[in-house]
Image 1 (tube, rainbow, N blue to C red):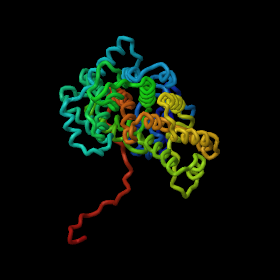
Image 2: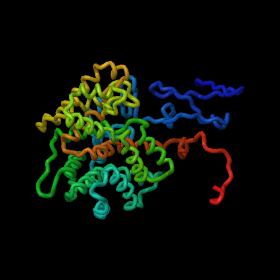
Image 3: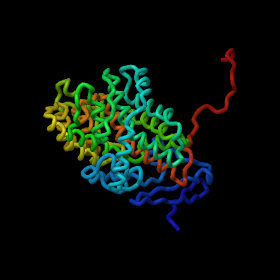
Image 4: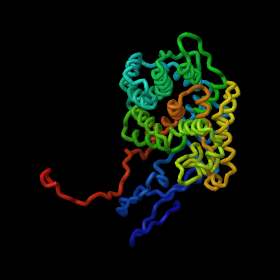
Amino acid sequence: MGENAELRVGDQVVELPVVVGSEGERAIDISKLRSQTGYITLDPGFANTGSCKSSITFIDGEKGILRYRGIPIEELAEKSSFLEVAYLLIYGRLPTAEDLESFSGSVIHHTMIHEDFKKFFAALPKDAHPMAACSATVGAIATFYPDSLDPRDERHVEVSIHRLIAKLPTLAAYAYKHSIGQPFMYPQNKLDYVGNFLRLMFGNPCEEYEPDPVIRRALDLLFILHADHEQNCSTSTTRLVGSSMVNLFGTISAAINALWGPLHGGANQEVIDMLAAIRDEGMTGRQFVERAKTKDDTSRLMGFGHRVYKNFDPRARIIKKACFDVLNKLGVHSKLLEIAVELEEIALKDDYFVERKLYPNVDFYSGVIYNAIGTPSNMFTALFAIGRLPGWIAQWVELHGDPDFRIGRPRQIYTGPTKASYQTVGER
């Protein structure tokens, strides 16, 4: 017999099973609580609620640990590539050389999109946000491929996965090209995944474009670091929307919208906005920190602290080095990076931040890299979406293979008016 927890409700004592994860995490299984007692639990923001069992990503926020399928993020960042990590997340194991060649080749050969998508983009305003464009066009992919939308048909799912990973960078780059009035570039099958995306973003038909290897590696690294992060808002959206049995494209369209929010994927854009404001106002990092600590001041120190990590975000350590590599390669003297380094040094020593465990997170330096390579700030979250896509897909696949699969349907505690009678317009 396993361990049980006891819950007393009035005179009734209910035994609830304790579930133990592979890393020792413990949960009280309340799946039968309502049927046994008539009660439900209330947990705003689901901070104490496990919505599923998952074998994809492990996070220990206290120790600053992040692992994909058991492999530390530090090892993957050093030795792997984004498409290899995508394969690991989706299929549950590292690919053989043959597996990786086949997977990469399939993805590269699906990067081109239907010509009619040009009409789709032409109908959008020039200042349309790239995340709105990405969400709309990903949802629209389903209209072009009605033959592969069944979430329970293995072949349909396989084809949809490859198409989606291949086409999202193309769609994101086209959203950018549309906004600046430049012609869309066709993908080139001779380039790798990240190199192709850089060409689609920054190339033009008038000249050859050769992706810089340092920039290409930094972007590949950023995609790896963003690839999955357990049951965050957009991933939970993926599972909830996917539980309705909608196709993969419809599910990911919803996840992109969830990521768009400034409390989630939009945070790196806010970091750049903060650094630019400090620069433009001629402040030092110390002056801004002191202002941010003042209760009656609205200034906020963006890029520090995390909902899960109560230690240094392991992704931030990795990306900081890549940030310096990119700027050194480009010969860029970045005032924004100078301010960022100053803010980090202050925050790591200042008692106010140390006591609150406000360490730099992955957003803190990723925005500086995106900015340095010429990416406009409204595209930052679209790049985040490209990186997070394999994690969303992996979670969607795992959901559909779960023996406990059921449509998501949270409960609520009703606090509105009690029974009332309808009044006609003349009686109101």
